[in-house]
Amino acid sequence: MKARLGSWAMVPLVALLLFGGGCDRGPVDPAPARERLQDLVFARRAGDLAAVERLVLPARRTELIETLTAIDGFVEAAERLQDYVRRTFGAALAEGVQLAALGRNLGVLSADVELLDARPLADEAGVVRVSYVAGNAPPARYARMVRSDGSWWYDPGEGFDPALPAAFRRMAEDLARFQAELEGDEALRTRIHRDAQVFQDALAERMAPGLGMLPG
Image (cartoon, rainbow, N blue to C red; front, side, top):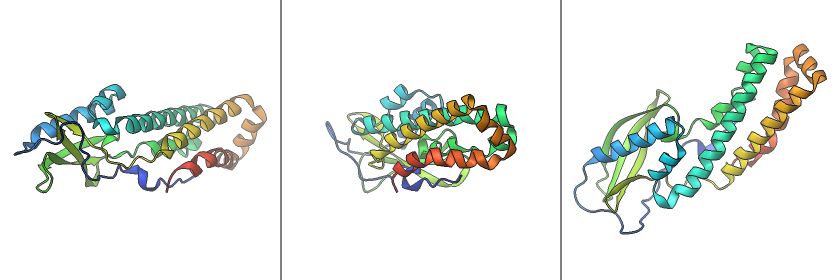
């Protein structure tokens, strides 16, 4: 099954959000912004969402963490299903279950990110653009860091659609139910052993409602 991710896969970079005391003015040294973003990359790689949350622009924390939590739950369910398929039906069929990739292309919040250079934006005070490569796959992308009240924050912008958490939670639940069905239905397992397409068709049918909830 091939799923199209749409526009959510890379977080858009949008206009600077002002809050509290507003953005700090004056000359900007980009190095601290890059270091702060590196802390976020390390926290995400370690699966420490609490640490990620502390580094995100406060106005965007709730929606970002809710989305990441739902996506992580989906990835875990997909990996559990793939492991079960590998043990039960063999490596060949398991390799075709690449659903976890749906939740891994998350821009600077992806699992494998290398930061490159950082540059202040000439037309926006207190904003640094940090270039990075995700998954060792050029071209470079850009993350936005905002300085406010003496600290640097990662600004994911407004690109997280409110439908995303519900869609990924639904897909995680459906994958878990499908795995339970496989474990409890010997007749279904026998049919899959005879014809791998039975598995593919069943998986596509169970994923359809959640995929249909994804925006774009």
